[in-house]
Picture 1: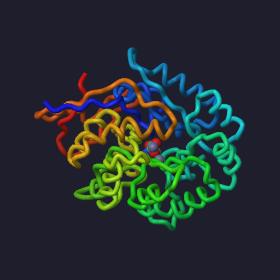
Picture 2 (picture 1 turned 90 degrees about the vertical axis):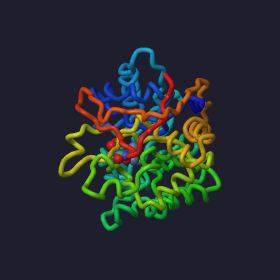
Picture 3 (picture 1 turned 30 degrees about the vertical axis):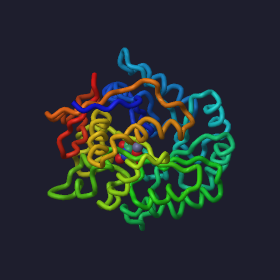
Length: 346
Ligand SMILES: NC(=O)N[C@@H](CC(=O)O)C(=O)O
Ligand SMILES: [Zn+2]
Ligand SMILES: [Zn+2]
């Protein structure tokens, strides 16, 4: 049997939600990943250090017995965020990053930033104290086609911000385009990108061909095949600027299978099996550890995990449940549309 031992991975972009959903999903992450950057887009969002402290406590309480897991907390940037509060959060060790959601760009982002000018004092402070900004990189202006939102964001928001504040460390999260990959590669410093599991596997056909398939709908929406190939090349290259952020984003099935379905794909449970498949296909299994376990911590100034996991390849397909049951309702699991053969050794 073929096997691969790597340092225990981390997830640099994760939605754990709250309440019954949090309880239903956290074990799928904490059984595999040592740490995860926890997205703050709850209802209401995690805006202050006090909010993040309370949310962290709820996460730790929901953690299954015996699991070791460290949630890395983020704050949801608003036009009213206090720079002092952000600095306090970083100093106390609680806050790993601040998250920029352009208002209206994605799930629970209506309280996000409309006018970047209003966020400048906080961003300047973050640059000064070395606190990274995570961005959902899409513009929301109605005249921009949804498939172009990332490219236009780079040109009209991200690049001007980086010119104005070159010392600010920015993570372009869930990169979905060749434009994003090229832009990150062109930067001399202070820019990196996370890539999701599903964007390495699906292109936009998965959502639209043969019927509309809500469980492949996420934001940023999957793009054309040439973009997927660019993401794959970047992820499997070993380039330290690219690392895993699953963006696993659970929504209960009734909220996805309806006339106006939510964006988000649930991959926490089968991400490592999917990634091993992708890296094997591209002849890059030796670089899976860089993508999933080394590049992320290096970017965030943390040590890689000491623990190891072993992935084993078996001839018989590894079967994951089609959906998980949570106290909030059923959540469909990402189906990569090919058989998986790798699994984490218990
Ligand atoms: N990725 C998604 O499609 N959805 C995320 C929000 C986000 O990361 O943009 C969610 O919170 O559901
Ligand atoms: Zn996002
Ligand atoms: Zn997300």
